[in-house]
Image (tube, rainbow, N blue to C red; front, side, top):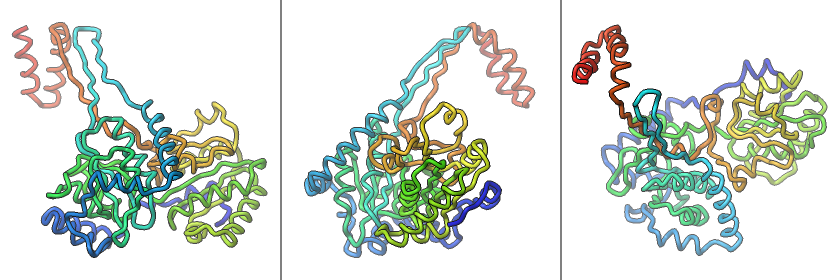
Length: 423
């Protein structure tokens, strides 16, 4: 953890999406094995990494299994899941795009039809911890999009799967749940086996092996985005509460040893106070899994002014951006690249992880420069129908043929001209 400036950030920010050759090679062999040997290979990897007593029969969980898991959790757990479900569902219903049609200046009609993807696979991490929130964030928009078949893979740890995760799948109405994780889960979704149905697109975060499998299998299967370590950038001023900022930083640091955290301010004294608070919390609190992230990936950035703050923020393009000030339209004009932006000291990023309603599957590692958080649109695709009339053909056939011949495509030109003759 150190105080740096804009030039240091611009020179030293490095991607976390690079994959080691050993991980890449391991994933490649797993994919080939699953493609060739199907369920036999799936069971081999489940026994090796998750549950030595696994059988093909218990890899696929039934609706009764999900219901039992839901019934087993506490009343408080159920109420929390239901509240999160209600808010996430409400927010995502506002995203669905209607199909529409229009007629142009001549007589061509265009019909833009939105349809759901037929089969989607959701990957829910589960080896190190339980993530029912990720079930909600992926399954709810899939269901709003009316995907006919929503499947989910979740690993077990020593044969035990989180009842909270399975309860979330039950609440969301997930159609199929498979007790399998890692690169082998993505490979099974991509190629299909006798037990696991082939998916058209996969969603959800995972470890480096899952991320690498998604990259290698893109094209065979659609993917959302390769996911890097979690990250947050906090923009603060001399009136901000350094203790609150410290907790905002630790809330991301506990996600992953490689989680990246930034605090940007024009006040050096504020940054010094934040540094002191973070150090104290690391030493004295019971928060786990934060030491490595804070030591290697926590940066306090001293800025020379508001304009430079915006430049730094947009360059980093953080997954989560927390601005410790009141909302202003100035933010809408100047914050261009970020996954989700939380404004004000009463809007901690943790709300977005669970219950505020927005999606927590967000672009990381500067991919917010070209990508957005998970939405209903990601579970749909649009098809355009073109109904061209006589007036249109008469008006545009000659320039169409001209351009086709300029590109050396004679058959293209003739396919238009033969229709012109018959008009």
